[in-house]
Length: 479
Image (cartoon, rainbow, N blue to C red; front, top):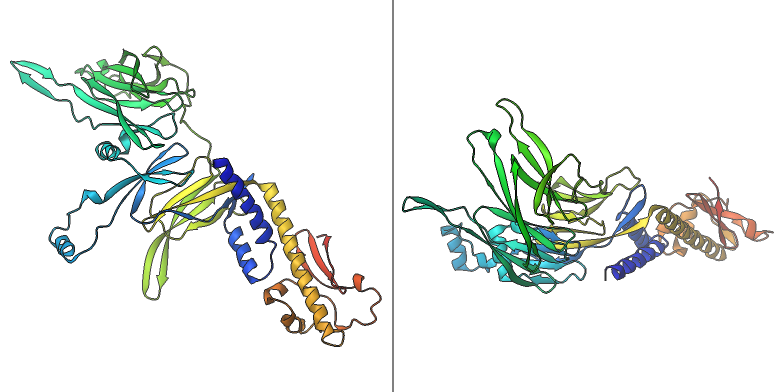
């Protein structure tokens, strides 16, 4: 589906170059300008921004999360129907708000299908928010956890007892909008889950400390369990580390986790840190001197980015600040930016593959496809289309000259007023833009070589398009 869409868009770009740039007349000039205003170039590529298409019409608050390169979760609110009683209630209880109006939907970016997210996932989202949502290696599959709450202790018969924390893990499949609980985890200490970005498993990590009086003696115990995406426990274990440990990333192969241990030194000395690796095969933590970039570590700067620019718009005595959204090249280029939308909310993004962008404007969600073309091929196609357009305009001017002379006893117009003379014989005055009239006027009768007598030309990059007295047109390369 994605490849088919790209093929169609490439054909559209080719047609746009051939028709918009190669056509003549005022409308085609406007189409050409509009087309070129939708192109951003880098040092290697040209990106054409296809027209916007409406995904959701109204009530969109923002994009909650991107799930792989195909799915997104979006949220919004349906405005309540206004009645006289409702309006009065708003004055009496302005903070009153019905949660029934809040909605969450999934968006398939390949098919543009938008579906309501099941109530179960909405409840998970409400309890955990985006921080409780974990992406997995399977496209369109995410994991959600319950809000754990705090660790509870109570005194019973003089003894301190600890109540276990129960955490439910749910699996949401955006392909069929199914939600099911895959495992219930009972733990004595707070924990969280992390899913491998490349492998079909997730890790439950819980930690506890010895609460020493001297911070130099802090030791952290990490207990971990490895589950497949259907909730089957594969292995478990625990490891004890001197210091405070946290994990921030996965290794490049998506198998092990990269973390950091921080140890407090003597009073007045800075804390020291060191890299640690959680081995999901052995469920052990080890220190290492090796530096890891990590799976989601530093990435190269993308060629394009979305740039939000506040703009003050004035109309008569009224002024308003709007957010204009621009597609911008991150490196110097001849066409560094183009306007995406005149007024947007703060919710917008561009895909990691630079093939799609989305934005919210006036409560509506829009998407635009980006078509990447080799810069050299684009410049070649643009130059060919501009030459074709100039040749077509030149041809129309030459034919208009001949029709004028046929109605004027075979006399060509004078150079002082040739536009006024030829104007009635062409479709649009804009065709005359750029044409340089070189014939000095006078009769065409008796010309020995009409095919070799130049009457005018249009200069373009790489040469000029020349019209001759017999009506034919040629391109002459040159400065």
